[in-house]
Image (cartoon, rainbow, N blue to C red; front, top):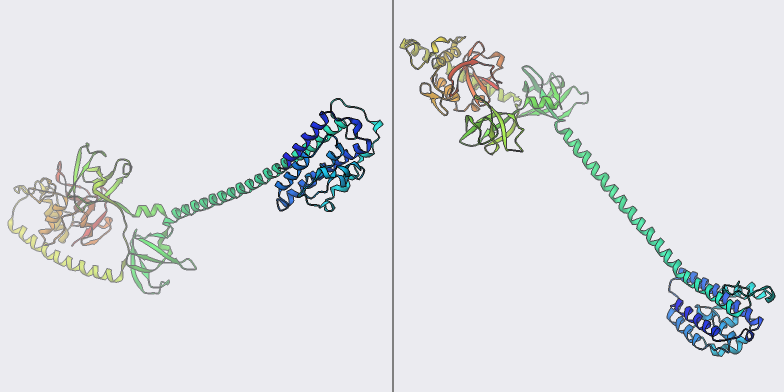
Length: 542
């Protein structure tokens, strides 16, 4: 609004000069007054701009000021040149009329009624620009020292009215345009600073989030690393006692056997004992017999198994349903996992059976890690009592079976049921040796999946079950279940009559490091080395 008012006023002045106003009508004194008024106007514009910037719009409305300026400009006449220039001053809010600022212009007093000002606050005493404008050096410059400038850009001291007015007009115009431009620049700078601050805050937030994510990633890494931190394995060849307190003199509450897994609850201050829990056993064990946090050892101590949950599972040569079937496994059987390469991609897992290594569909098995655990003192006593009872019953059944065998007086060569078993003899005596010799009678007879006939066909677990049934011992028709019958012995200590368990297979030890077993449909019942495959367990009945 202010800029438009000044422009309108200047245009009126320019029209007066162009319309033929003569230089003679303005004396040297009025000329100095005009220039002084223009200079005062310039200073007032700067002062008003500074005040407006600092105070905002809290003072008199700009619209009133614009209306006053327009009314003043409308009263200008060609015959009152001095009055025209005297009316420039009231354009700014709070300034006194130009006639009061230029005391050297007596003509301005007579022109004052023609330039009536309304709505302009008489605050000249508060405006420091007024006395500075009254002392403008241009009024003291002699006219003889100036020369006409045809370009219209004469110095401010030039007494020529037309060129001096145009110069003053140009100066005022540039000053009035500079004020809003400066305000825009300051606003832009303020906005830039705000944006920079926001961006900086955003960057700080992102940095904090990134740091938080990094810390989360580190925490996840630590969690993965600590997965086995409190897991231990008993590193003994036989067993170690678990005690009620961290002292060798305290009571034994249980035992840890070779490769039993355990969880460390705490460690004593001197590091000599661990408070552990393994199965039902809870107590203290010497740190000399336990390895903690060894991932490789922990994995070695576990048995990765695939448990069958369908009536009959085909085991194929390759991980494909179009591949050849190499064997069949019954429901509930636990197979040792040999290859997990194709579990995620194709849905097949490699397992070990009597016919060799093959693949089964993940749709019909569950994978699991199997560990063995410690035994409490009470559980051990109950187990030993049960095994002793089973041993006595088996011994009595074996003695009765031997008596029946002698009375039959049948030779191995004439017995079709033996299939050549007479060429083998068990390396042992007693009840276990009797069981082994009885089993050897059926070598050469056929293998039939799911069968239990020693003469017409049987599978591996059916063979062991039927042999022991002859001695009055009932066993399950499952190779996996037979890992829990009787009591366990170390493979290096196995003897004739012991049950030797493998992944998906089972046989009977005949002594001398050999077994008799119903192997495959291709081979039937035969004798093999006991170590032809990895032994999972050895169980003793007699």
